[in-house]
Image (cartoon, rainbow, N blue to C red; front, side):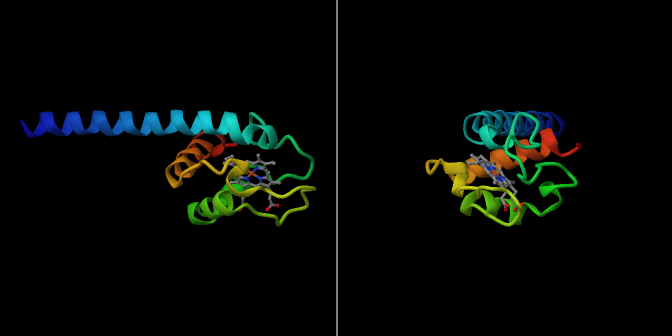
Length: 108
Ligand code: HEC
């Protein structure tokens, strides 16, 4: 019985993670892709790359804050607007899109 419960929990947990990544993907495609491009390497000259050696080397806390509040530190001609310019994004949405970015672009 315990084993069965553990299996069910694992399954549900895996599903929740998959749902989060799916949500993060759709947020990325709606709100972020115009500036960051389909591969995270940027659609704007000088923009910080969302790669392991680029911005993703920073901690989740730092990146969460940058997405939530916006940022301007690199040589990019424009700044990152708070929440990518979409004020309706919740903290959960930001976590979901960050998880998606790490999963999708983290190995490049
Ligand atoms: C209008 C263009 C634009 C949009 C839309 C945009 N970004 Fe950015 N983003 C930038 C620029 C420019 C930078 C580099 C900012 C800097 O120099 O610090 C950046 C930087 C970042 C960074 C690195 C932050 C750091 O601390 O190094 C992350 C992560 C990021 N963006 C994620 C996102 C996500 C997620 C979205 C969608 C919710 C998004 N961006 C939407 C322009 C944009």
